[in-house]
Amino acid sequence: MNLKTINLSLLAIGALSLLAGCKTISDSSNDVDYGSSAPLGDNKKEGQSETRYVFGWGNLPLELADPRGGTTTGTPVAYAAPRELPLASIRSAEKPFEKDRAAILSLVGDYRTSFHFLETMGLYEGYEPGRPYHSWATEEVRVLEDRGDFISLQHTLVMHFQMPDGSEMESMVMKHWRQDWTYEDEDLHTFRGDGTWARDRRSSDEVAGSWSQAVWQVDDSPRYEAIGKWIHTGNRSAWTGENSWRPLPRREHSVRDDYGVMEGFHRIVITPTGWIHEQNNWKRVSGEGKEPEYRGHELGIDRYERIVSPSLDNADPYWEKTGAYWREVRDAWKEVYSRRDRFSLKSNVDGRSQFEYHFEYAGKLDAGEPHDSSEAAKFARETIQSFLTDSPESAKY
Image (cartoon, rainbow, N blue to C red; front, side, top):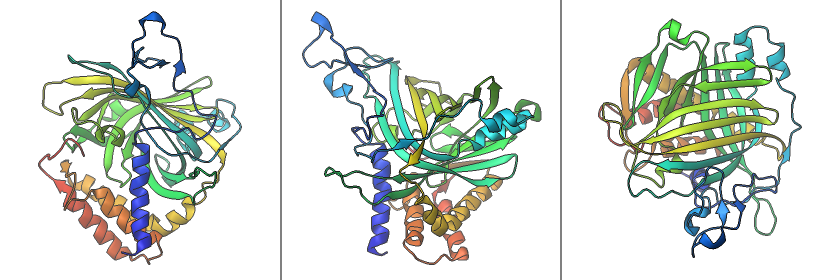
């Protein structure tokens, strides 16, 4: 592996670390104000913060008042003009199915994204609130595939970092998560805890008029899948998913080891400036077949705000060079889904995560190595197979 490939791999790992880091530095004056200072009066104790949060805990200890998250400063962004709701594409569609498609396709674009999460309660003796989480990114969402009743959207991070002296680093491009939308989906694979997924068949009556949203990790391994309906009422278009289970996200499993399942529902809402992903999550200790036990609850808001600058066009050459390989990875997963009703995933093989294997291979292509379709398909298939197991190994996949 050459030096450029190594650097690309390190940058990719670094980008995820930035999103799940320890402290946020705002990247523009347009940031949402996460807290506000307010006098606490005579009851204020030494070592307490004067920062208060919406749905917060009042007098948070100083070490809990500062949100954890990304540690970098991004270049200033220019936001796109707000749009009238309902969007013209949704308003002009005559059938509900076409309105739904228009809403899903409206998620495509260039965004400045902010991620906000706050734990709202604990459910065990001795509970102490954790630090809120706040991070940011600039990312592009593009259509990978559109077959009418199936739409695949790929997220790509294109990060522009500003140095302390005001100069701008070369943009960093990294494949991010993917969302697949399927109309009236009767064949799902849902998360069951302990790094395990299983087939979940639905009746045609149960899924009539609904869309499944399947979310995939940055390495295209599965994350979660849920059924929900798009509802278009006046100027509001929103999709609300059913209660579902999800593996812990990186922002949690990098700092927590006391629970293994995110249980809850999420909602996507179209806004004049982009769209919002709202989350309502219970933190469940145990997985399938075990007595429910919960550690606490959190609320999350991911805001996707449309931007016109900086340019995120650097995602294009990345996908021109690596797109064929990632297609092989997706095809390998389709084969797994078609053959297996149930499977578990190892957290690592030979001390490395699945993410590292795939991104190393894609990094070589991005660095200029030629693509060999048969070799790529073999590597993708064998890598995924090496992580598959019939016995749950870890709740921290």
